[in-house]
Amino acid sequence: MVVLVLGIGGTLGVAQWRQAAPPVAAATDRTDNPGTARGNPGVPEAWRNDPRVRAYRDRLAFQRDARLFARQAAGLDPAERARRAGRLASAIDHYERAGELSAGETLMLRIGLIRADDGDEATQVRRITDLVERYRAHARARNAAFLQAQRNDPAFNDYKHREARIVREVMAMTRIPGGLPRDTYLRQRLQQERQLAYADTH
Image 1: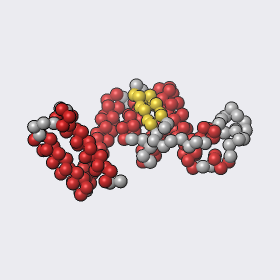
Image 2: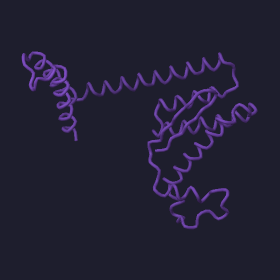
Image 3: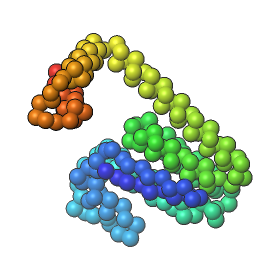
Image 4: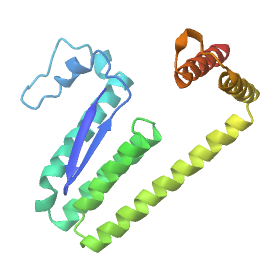
């Protein structure tokens, strides 16, 4: 997992890539070392051309660009700052669409880019507020779609009926097996039912 720490204008963003590095990535990283004239002759050309390796190296380049921008943003002229921020924003778009950054991680990175802008504080606050609300709206829409899919799933509905039956049974008991507290026993029964329901779907 690749971890990116991006600190811009007082905002700290942490992005964790879910795609593991290819086993040859460490070796290929040395082939383009500017301090090595001929690279690493021991790395096969096929490895350097592997799409997984190229994608991994692109992510490393994005990390380097983000770290440099975080350090240099305040001293850049407006045109250069806007150009580099736009390039980073495009990369964030790409990794978000690919599912390699979560919505929360992407939000933190985008807030960092807004903080690096030379706009006044009121403008930054408005842009960040709009951005956060947009992500919240997307989250609500995804959650609603997920709940609707569950309601339309016969297996899930059957599980919920069994769950309700277990709750009624446990709450009606006058003696709890093993002398356990009622809440503890109920949690155990529900956990067992969830495990059975999950096993039935696989």
